[in-house]
Length: 306
Image (cartoon, rainbow, N blue to C red; front, side, top):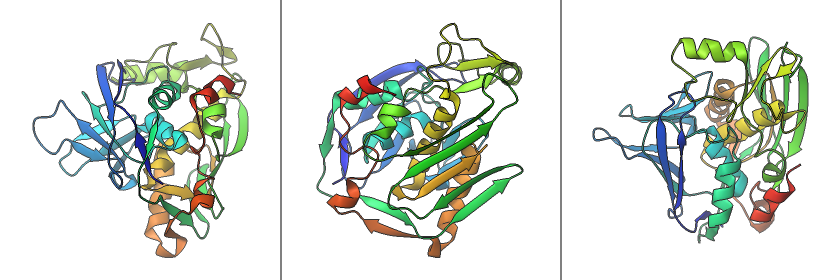
């Protein structure tokens, strides 16, 4: 069955790139709504922005959604990962600005708020997208691929010249709370040179060591270091889940990424949906639904992160 949150959820924070204070309110929504953002600060144009792959304006730094009236909301990936990882299919996200707050740089604050509020089942079957054949996209050395599989899995590989990150690889079957236990508290990361470059063009204004892992060569600049030795690749997997959650249905397939980012994952979804023979829409029975990322997750799972 589809789900929504039981009660309203309130969160406040600043945007990573804008540095502006933002208030966010997650509201229950009926079956079939999906995830929709609503800009409460807009007085012109349609303030509602559905969380869909075809509304993504592809950028290298974050995932940005733009509706037909040009109304946008950016940095949605951590919240979308939390929705997918907690099994939330329907919600209205009211937001007072154009960027989802970065909070601690991971999905954990969103996950904690969702699990504390609890979920309500709705009397409607879960819509899923079943991958039927391999789809792959490339950009220079980076690539991303979807293969047929019984349920969603994510495998990722990164390779950075900085010794603090270097080469990292990880794979995870996303069924039954794996996201909450193993990925949700992995923070966004960057190099000090990236921070300087972003701020030079007016980006990353809300970034700090409290909401991002920053490295310089072999050194991790955060006083407390990394939460995991492979926190960067875990965060890339978190991002991938959030970007795949824009498929407008539960995705049944094996995702693999090498040096991929937000833009390339969205390009992969566009390639999938451009080929009608590559997928089919199905309604999940109880057995199939039981393999989705958020099934059976509870607040107690946050105490057992890897």
